[in-house]
Image (cartoon, rainbow, N blue to C red; front, side, top):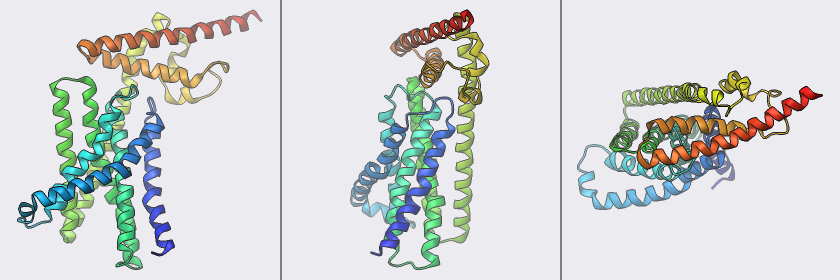
Length: 330
């Protein structure tokens, strides 16, 4: 195979996906997930989910072969692939759910999107190199564009939907299970509908596919934005009493409620770990938010964690006060 084809395929398969991955991670302002975990989800989608999906899809086709090919459409693509692939992509989100950093729907969206982008990256590379021997010139370049800008985004949107549903398991209860099942069904429907429309060979169906993708991306974006806004409102609500309790310095109230102000320099003592301080503040807000909704042992565990976070933040406050006292003495 031509080395140029392989190089272009790698760049077009990985470049847009990595750029989008970093952007999604960066936009999650108030409580960004550890980048290493986001990359784990991305790599799982690009390697683990792909391998398992191929194996299980082939098994499914063999087992239900006669039933699949009774339909007037490619059921292996429209039914089997979406059911298997969405579940395989979501496995890593179930595992990462155990992380202490995984708290909200926004986190589920980020991890779900990451595994979807990883899956899209590897799938695109396989398509680009596989079709390079039968497509030439503009036809192959068109394939690069369509799959990089559209099909991969479909994987991202579907997996983000499932990831958002999985995040509800943090709250426990029967309702959380319903969220997971509902989100999985929606993800499969998005994936299956897309595959049906783009494999039908109809120009009208292709236009519908583009419209579907656009609608899905807009909806995911809206959920993401509302999730971030919700985190900010929750932050303002649950941290308010922390200033009264002396856990957080009252002088920092307006700063800790604004992302832009937090990122500016000069307001925090240089000899203290500002990054750690902001992480603890965000974690306190999120844990308290979960505490109010939790029940039983989960509630007890969150209460203990809130107490520990408060202890560490109080130490910061004491050091901050001590530094101000020294300055005033001088």
